[in-house]
Length: 130
Image (cartoon, rainbow, N blue to C red; front, top):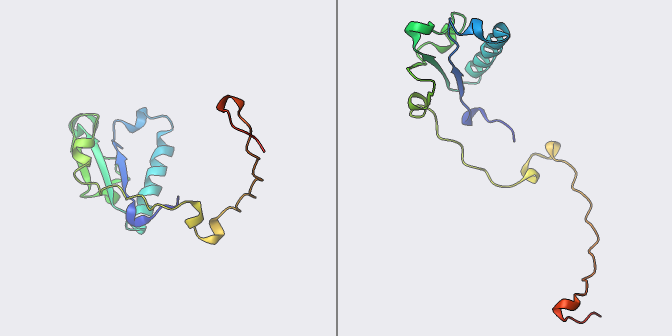
């Protein structure tokens, strides 16, 4: 399945000043978040960020602040669904179809059809075989 910018959104969860030093490879994690946020901005994909208990854990890290300005949702619990769900777009409806509905250059070759086996005889079912 290909991603569609119009059906996408990005949520950056708790990239906070006092949390980032505790995250394994935090600098790399932050670099990836910055990359995603910039791409989302270029493609006009909606972007949200959360902050849990900002008074204790600090606000969003400085590097992300310009990219998430006005889009930071405060929360006081680990679970952010109560603040996120009202703002997120509903999930895209399944488009139906299958891999054959992809553009030709993305389709895999169809497997060769298998020869059909002859019907077997089932004596227990009292069938006669020809």
